[in-house]
Amino acid sequence: MPMTLDPALYDGAVVPLRYDLLCDHTEKAPAFYFVCRPDMLIEERLVRLAELYGPDPRLGSFGTGDELGFGGVFVACELPSYPDGFKAWRAEVPNRTLGTLESDNEEGWLAMKRPQITLCVLESVLQYEEAPSNDMELQQLFIVQAMCEQKMHGASMAATLSPAFRQWIETNRGLAESTARQAMVTVAEWMWPDYFSGDKFSRGMAEREYRVWHHEDGRGLMIDVPGNATGIYVDGHSLNDGPGWHLDCHNLDTVIQQLELLAGLCTMLRLVRESQLPNR
Image 1 (spheres, one colour):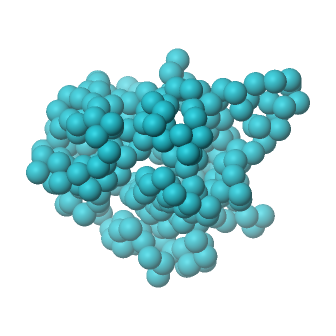
Image 2 (cartoon, rainbow, N blue to C red):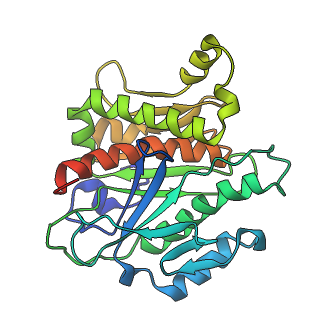
């Protein structure tokens, strides 16, 4: 068995919904939505992990209410289709002018880090919590774990997908892969439009660096973004033997790359949830 983030989820056990992380690239400003039961966000744990993950005071204090995360980057919103007891928060994808990795003082990089380091904290708090059942019998579909450090491979991430999520992707390859790729391109252009500026040829070259694909025999999932062969992929163990999928990463160095990959993965999760929730 691969080193999964949640063996029960990977094996297909009944795991009631702990949290969802969705991406909607169709809005005027693309955004991530975080959904969970507020009573599972234990304030003491949030604060302790926030101190561990976000020691930089420029990130702002860590909010635990309607303005959640560093600088209150996730703002409470309405997603009424979820079961009673769940709450949603929304964070727009930043589109500040970016500096380089060395210019850490720039507000642009801080804007990129706030949502991602916030997600590191939230995911860490909820990863091993046991959620009660809900009246819609929604199950956890994936677990993601990410780093957010300013160094080589400092944006590494891994994810475990449930068998149900895997089966949905395999059954809906065309929709899943094309929509996820478009989400990545949209989010990337929103974050750093200069990369997509220029003539039609240059834009086309930029867009081709974003890929969502699978092996020729129809197995697996690979998601690529610009970089040195940068992306996430189903590892060999779960590709051949797993009921679920475990995704590892390769050469994932920056927060930008991480947010782009999450946009693709979390867009596919949104599509699955839209098939399960009423009135979406």
